[in-house]
Image 1 (tube, helix red, strand yellow):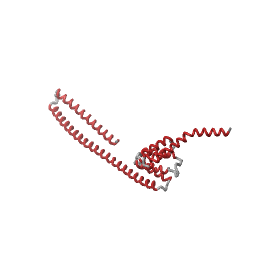
Image 2: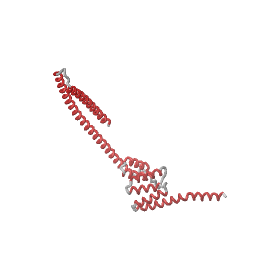
Image 3: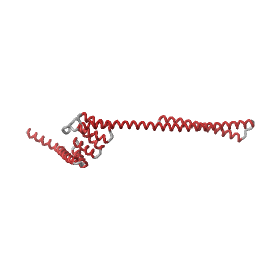
Image 4: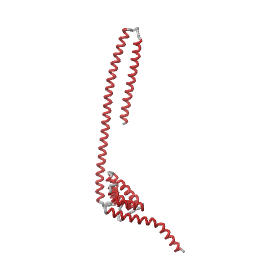
Length: 254
């Protein structure tokens, strides 16, 4: 009875596991077909089969890795990066292939970063690959090249930054120069207005001296107008000063 029960349990376990086993076999079959296309440099056909292999077995590290290679060969570096990284995540703490293809995946990941001009990330990937396979001269060469490109990139960024800073300084100087010129014009106009006011005052004083006891209606109106004009000029001057102060504040803040 115990023997029969063991057989029943085995059969039930086999039936439950059968779908996943069949899917894994289908995935491997698709992988082999994709590899055949890849060797014939038919990378699009290889990609299609690798994608199907991934759909059949989402845990397949090899399918993710090979799909990344097929995409890389078609210059689709962005998506290739995603599948290399997916393969690395699934491979954490595991070995897939003998010898392990983990260093190779990291090497290819570095290559994809290089093609995307992401030199810092490429350097990191090559370093990780060399930690796992220090004897790989190709990775060592690529690391040296990536370091050189990263240095050039950083130097260019520094150069661009300095150039932008100079342009900002020039703009500031130009604005300051315009403000100074405007200030000079305003000052000159103020002086001219003051001279006119002095002349008008002198003229009015002379008229008052000539007719000290008389203040006609026209004279009264002129005096009121003069007072209004003085008030208006004072207000205009205050507005200009406020505007200048605001411009200077914005300049510094910017």
